[in-house]
Image (cartoon, rainbow, N blue to C red; front, side, top):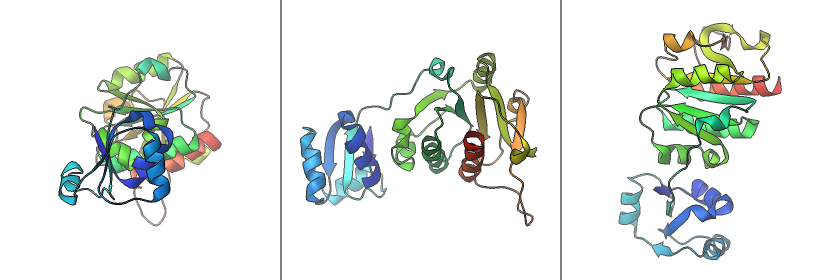
Length: 226
């Protein structure tokens, strides 16, 4: 798996250097960074701009690229003793998923469950600035089955929904899972029926919605910090 971009590269270098298979530099880097790279013992290749652009598929690599071991998803059973987790149901935008992971890690969520058929994990790693490596991340295709199992494990299932109750007026159980839906059509009706409560953020000035990652940040802070 090829990753690129300075922030993600440096996060892996600092915290998960064992994941490097080979390192590719497309420009000179600071001497202290190069010393840290050299200490990993991983082969360093110099690549020209054309090859770097090809490896990054035209993305902004900032001169830092690497082949890393495949991302390791966690088993679903690993979440059952969590206090708080987020379920991303049908999200497609890697920027949103990555931003949610950054917030989840920063505020203290235990796990992230991604319900999706197709997943661009390289894009998510980059958008999360490496935070995905610090979380317990589960990938599933059967979201309804997962919600049933979470309820059996004692989780209160909360759905972020525009027609839900004001999140400021709600109390949450000690074990809770927050479901965030697709950027366009939200959470499917059959999934909402599985949830114990619907929560919303009341809008002013006639605005009807927030970006899903912004909404998650507000709800996550409320649930974890009161």
